[in-house]
Image (cartoon, rainbow, N blue to C red; front, side, top):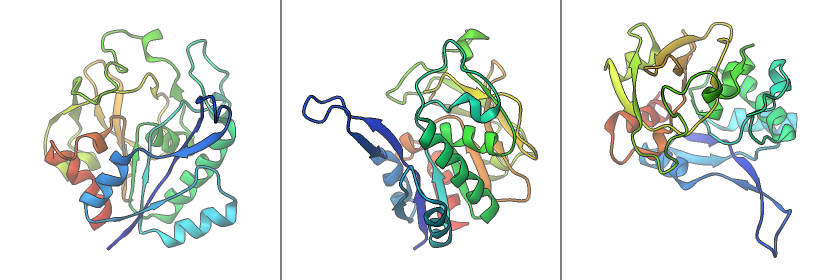
Length: 234
């Protein structure tokens, strides 16, 4: 059974009895998706020392880099846009360093939503800090219940097409940021009808990034389940 590292996010508790306490968090959908694909989930703290990161990289056979909050714009050379959402700088610095190590390890990595954005930044790319400020053709933050929102068209030269063998997929959409300038060496694997990048890959390396949330769809869409089997069986 392959050990699959799953990154975490951090939230600040608002319950009166715990107000102000920080909690590391991973939604059960990520854990379920890895288990369904035959993997053994290994939960990785959102803030780690360099030595701890290296041990997790060595321990795990593959990685799922999860979604979460916005990312500090200073980490890709920009100042916050007026519509940039909340971010946690310490978490962002730690997870960006971990993402770079995961890429360097050349172990299979499935980067989801924020995870895909971290991959892009790790390779020198930038983000669109607020999609509606540029275009309102599609509401990419439409439905946080994970329902299908729009389609994405796959590039036949991309790693995602090679895995899924389909021209178009129907996806959910839970984000207001997206890949801007593409990171070095990355390939655009899929786009939404309005041109927003929905998937990326790193040629000649087992790395896929998707902007939607396939972990919420593994029980209803075989193609989404296949993404997680790709990580556990690669």
